[in-house]
Structure formats: structure tokens, C-alpha cells
Length: 322
Image 1 (tube, rainbow, N blue to C red):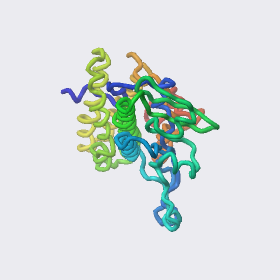
Image 2 (image 1 turned 45 degrees about the vertical axis):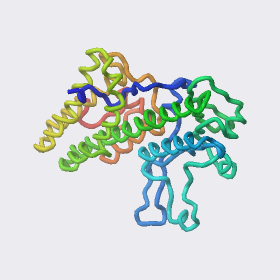
Image 3 (image 1 turned 180 degrees about the horizontal axis):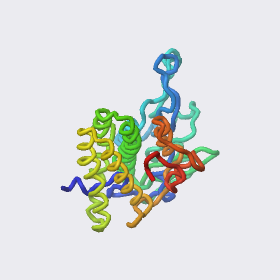
Image 4 (image 1 turned 60 degrees about the vertical axis):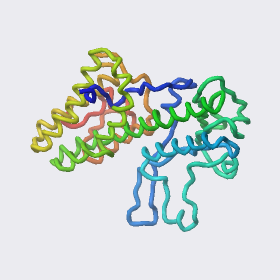
């Protein structure tokens, strides 16, 4: 089946704008984790919230502003809340997300995505573009991701890439990745019905459907050896493993989970096949998988607990996986 040849972490084969510097669109700190709903009995910590403001020019073309809204939409699919509590409601101060360059002057910010070139930020930076471009610059310890082009059409192309491809892909990838870690915890605890729902949920492992659809054109051009790894991984996660969960066969489910994880390592680390992922993920964002595993009592620390590289290097083990 065509679906069976898609992988979680491949990069979509869309028309990509110029990215400056390399991987800037992948490594920008779009989200962080924080406390939400303070002042209520349901207060939670370690919740994914936006770590950026999305900015458009007050005199920008409406079609460009519309693309800024789409970027906000896909960021919203990745995070779990905008980050507010009872006090913010009382003061009518729900955190902003999509603001004009004029509104930005009255706000404190650390990271922004600037959509379009007809705004004060681009003018102050002295930037101009000859091609569709996504460019990251740092000023005074703050990060600015500028989405632009030589004209409106090129700017829209860049914005659509950031929204439809990059943020869309990240939303699916992280939901799938974190759900995969939680899946092992549910299996270990014998929570087979919960595990099966997690596999089939559009907010769980099936969120990878985003990535499958986006990555299809690229995967079609891969070598047979890469395709074989992808096919094995998807056959396990969406066929063999759900069957083991339905049968409540813990030993079989654990073994299949291990095999699926190995296919991830193969692509991420280049084990036995060419390495697919060419960049190191943002550790602050990526490391939540460790806390998820800890929550299930799965992690035995050997070495640097906080580094995602420690896990990949085998310095951190999940009980039963060696």
C-alpha cells in the first residue's frame, strides 16, 4: 500500500523557500512548556504553550495577513493551550498570539515570527529578499524568524511553506513521538484498551497521518532499503501492534514496540541505512519524552538525564529494552 511507505520524521517534498541559516525553520523555538489554568483545581504544569508571537504589518496586504493566521492555526495544533489562568481572565489579559507591528511595540517578547516585509521590523533590520525566504536573525538576545520574498506572491509561498509544511509536520511529529513513548507505559501497566485508543487517536499515534501525507512525494524517491524500513515501521504501528493490543498480549506488544523503535533509530541515527534526519532537535522541546517515560516509571538513568542525546547513545534505558 502507498500508505505503508511513509515515515514519521521525513521532511516533506514541497517547494521549499531559501532557509537562512540552514534548518532555521526546524530549530526555531516555536513552543515551550509551562503552567496553565492556575487558580483552578485543574491547574497543570509542563503543558505545551506558544513561545512566539506572530507579527504582521499594520499596512500589509490582506492576503499576506491571512497566511499569518494560517501559521497561527498550525501552531495551535501543536500546542495544548495558549497559556492562561484565572487571573488572566479576571484582568482580560489572555496572552496574545497574532499581533501587528504597531501592537508589538507595547508588548514584551522573546521570539517572533514576522510574516511579510511591509512592516517596521523588517525595515529596522534592513532586510530585503530576492527569492521566497525564511530567515532567522538574532537581536539583543531575541530571535526573529522573517517570512518574506521579493513580492507578495513569493511572501505567500514562504508563509504557506512554514504553515502547511513545517508547522503542520511538527505538530504531527511531536504528537506521534510523545504518544509512542506513552504507549510503552500503557503496555507495561497492562492498559491495553487505553493503548489501543492512543494508537488510533488523531491526537495520538495516528497523528502521523499528517506526516505520511506530507512526506509521500519524497519517500517515493527513496532507495528500496529506506522504503523497507518505513514499510516495516508502519506495518508494526498500524497493523501488528494494534492486533497484539486487541489480544492483550503484553509480551508480543512490547517486542513489537521495540522493533518499531529500532526503525526510528535507523532513520534518525543512520543505523544500517543512510541517515534521514540531518539536524539535532531542539532539546528543550524534544526532552519532554523523557518526562513522559519517567511518569510511567520506565526510565533508569545512567549518565546525563537531561540530554536527548544520552538516550540515543544508550546511556538512558527503558526497562526491558536493551
